[in-house]
Image (tube, rainbow, N blue to C red; front, side):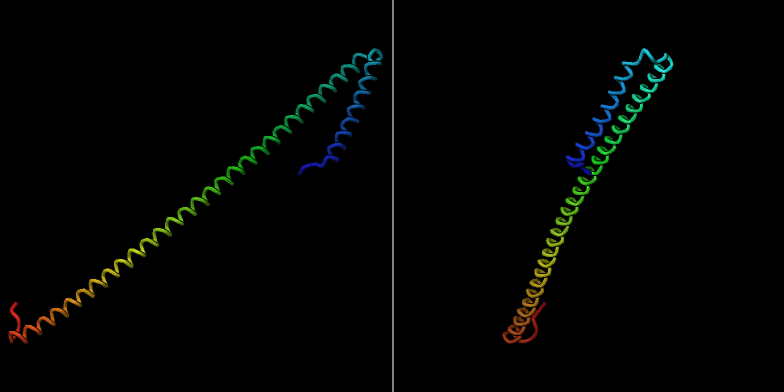
Length: 146
């Protein structure tokens, strides 16, 4: 969720105030460093090192989170592209199968039309032979020789 400009300015203000406070503390420490004993200075150094280590760890964690978000977005993009590719492939295959089936149906219809024409031609030939037999019997009397 994106932060608005006002929220970012407010956060910046808080961070600047915190930074100012830390700078003031550092200034006080610098003025009075001679007054502190060696143990107190060592303790302050240790605390500062701990703060630096904590900031480094927080930066590392933030970087890992950012990388995780990038990896997640990349994975999502890959999955989306793959799904779109599969959808296009399925649509292409569907069109090919539909065209194949349409072509085969037309071929089957052509075969049936051809068969019907051949049967009609055969029927015509039968009728022509019957007519020729009748004419033969009328002209030559008797049945035709084989």
